[in-house]
Image 1 (cartoon, rainbow, N blue to C red):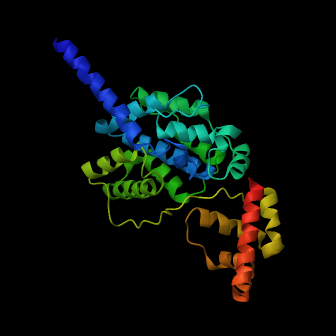
Image 2 (image 1 turned 45 degrees about the horizontal axis):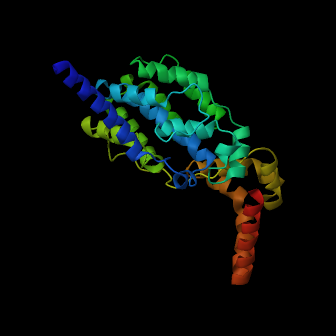
Image 3 (image 1 turned 90 degrees about the horizontal axis):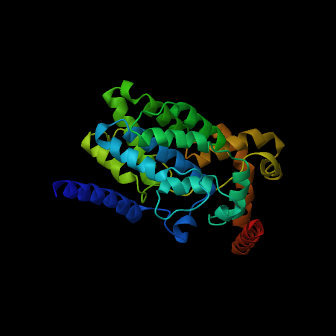
Length: 302
């Protein structure tokens, strides 16, 4: 009887875990998906993996990280799974086919970005298998570096967090608080309603790892799927001139990463700003024409 009671308690805890995932998921229906760009999914995949890597370093949270990894892992990620984790569904979009891209905010742009991306599914599954077994991941650095390259992760703060979390045990107390606080800022901006944020916030509270000394510079908006390579970038020369193209690319990359932009880089975008300013100064009818032109351009992309 006692054994049955223990088994029931164990199963109840497992069901509570599944229930909590379902209640908190941010990818549960089409409305949630339609606010996400392909770039959003890439960043959220990366951040979710950083959180798992951090949680797994604390004995109290290692079991949660293990369960989460177990529920995420699949041989492939070709199907959206309502009863899986947010991380599973982010990977579904990151590695998805045209049908998956059609569920996102800007399907055409997502398909272009998808064609130019590469995701290490086998390495991910090895990472998740090790976590689910309670083992320390043996190739975490290689996994994150490959994801950064394959998904074009440009945010330097995220890369800094990756370096610090991989070396977490060697950080000072102050460095640990700053690292976790930066991760909290990013998570609250990008994964606020996800199934993984609660345990990160619990960890920070339990271990006093959140500090007010770190400013929150994380952009709260969705990151558009902007291509800064090839044909799209080349066409910018009609707006800013050929001599500004290199600095213009840097302007766009910094803006998408939510970074401050040096004045010398802003100069490259001034011709485009001047163009818009001329239209605004010409009056409401000219602004309406510009907005109508934008609507036509957006409908052409679909």
